[in-house]
Image 1: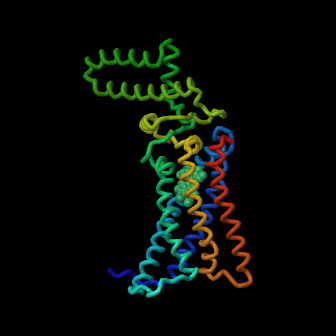
Image 2: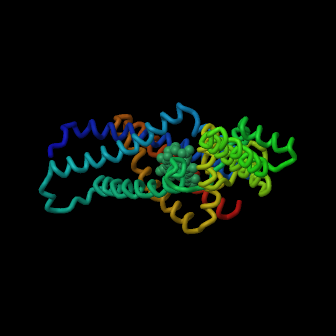
Image 3: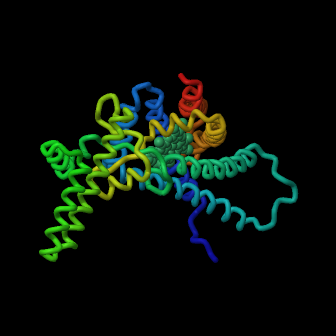
Length: 319
Ligand code: HEM
């Protein structure tokens, strides 16, 4: 199969541009993660994740970002394959140049980052997509639907619990529906009421177990099944993953912390070369600025990697 012919420098420029975008994303992601270090029960981080999960501009950005990662990987693989095809016979003597070694390293660190990223998605992003189970939370106000409030008020007026009320309604309705031949409608109505009971039960459990956030805005520690119930009964309630709790919980396990530190080390290796290399490919380097770019690259890499590492390490240390 023939690969489309695109000049290798064009591919390199595309890799650099997409890579530059990813460098900006990393800085942003690292800064946002620092909110996890606040001991505020997740107030700031949850508010941030809620904004990120509900704002449509961010949703478009997310698609662009995932596209950029895939494009970055595909372009680099394409570069490697076309370079190999251009020289099917390997050099007799293995190259020992510095450039050759770093770019080989870039390939391997790139692959490792991709693998770590899939594991990272398994921890968080796939939970948001609903492909992996996690811990969820929902805005308290979203559960105050008219049907739920009506049921609770009616139960209070009759002096019964909501469950007793629905049992009574069912028994009575069944008696009359047999006469009217409306069993199906009644069964559907009672089914809906029972769904509302499940919501009341979720709120009750949250109150009993103190799972309401300090500011009263969120009901926390919902299970996957509870999330499913809420999505069915009150679709507009949109339960969200509790990333603050999930991150803090994960980083209490030493093997997860070590795994993440390995991830950051590989990113460090990749970025050390990626930063100046992007400038070079885009022709933005110049002998006058080379030193400045090198220093900026070092500062960026250390800043981002240490910022990422601070979260698992400090959480693990209980700080
Ligand atoms: C302490 C380290 C990290 C933590 C706690 C963390 C946490 C998270 C969380 C909670 C999400 C889901 C956010 C959402 O979808 O709303 C996420 C998504 C993501 N993370 Fe990380 N992350 C860390 C490190 C990294 C690193 C080092 C990279 C890159 C190499 C990375 C790349 C991504 C990407 C690409 C997404 C999906 C896009 C997005 O949702 O914005 N993360 N991360």
